[in-house]
Structure formats: C-alpha cells, structure tokens
Image (tube, rainbow, N blue to C red):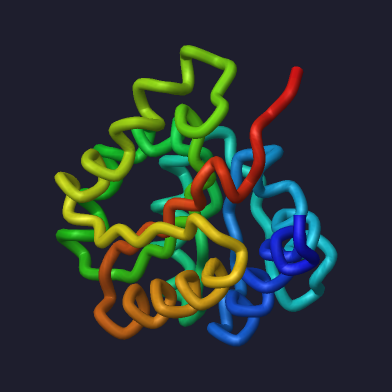
Length: 172
C-alpha cells in the first residue's frame, strides 16, 4: 500500500476543515476510525456520537439553522436507517454531507452487509441524494471537497460512498 493509500482519512479531514465543517455526527465505525479520531481531537469540531444514523440528519439541520456546517459519517448499512429523515433535507432545503463507508462490496465476509451495501447508491439516489464515489486514495479528498461544495452551495443532500476496496477488507 502506498503512503497516499493509507492517509486518505487525514486528507478527507483536511478537506472537511477547509470546508469549515464544525460538527460531525457518527455511529462508531471501523472504516471511519481514523477520521473519527481526528474529529474527536480537534477542538474546533464538535463530535457527536449518534445512537442511529438518522439522528445525524436532524443534527445537520440543527447545525445549519445555528449557522454551522455539519457532516454525517456512517456505514452503508446505516443508509437504510436514514430514508424517512432524508425527506427533511428535500422539504426544508438544508445541506447534508454524508460520508458513507461501504460494506457488502470487495472481500465482504458478512452476508448481512451485502443487501444494503449493494443497494445504498440506488437507495440514496431514489431519495433525492446526489451520490459520488471515492474508490481510490488519490482522489478521495478531492471527491469529498467537491461533495462538500455541492452540498453547501446548493443546500442539498450529497453522499460520498467510500468504497470497501479503499477502506480495506475487515478480518475477524
């Protein structure tokens, strides 16, 4: 693995900082572990541990109403938990940036992750979310930066799907 391949979370964090993200909501996730750690140790970012991913949609709405930018970190299995709440972004026109680590793809060992992992992109698009993919370390941060601009300039919901090949296969 190249050095760039291993530091993609650091570069995504830098993109979030440049994009003035002040609040990050997440359900703990091994795929986002490094990014979560960076957010937790930054005094300028309020990190919020969620009990379910759909709370992150409301968190992002509240942050926006309070004049701040938020991002929601989740695993692809959490996409299904957000479907009803995504109507809030469409009807109230506030930005929502979701960074979704994918499961159910490359070298997946857990069959329970496959259904949502293989349909997350289509489900998000059906819910009116613009979807981008980050499948390699070299373009991941640029993809997140573009999605951040899209979400906050257009006041719309945007998801970046971070491919399982990039985050690495889980071994248990």
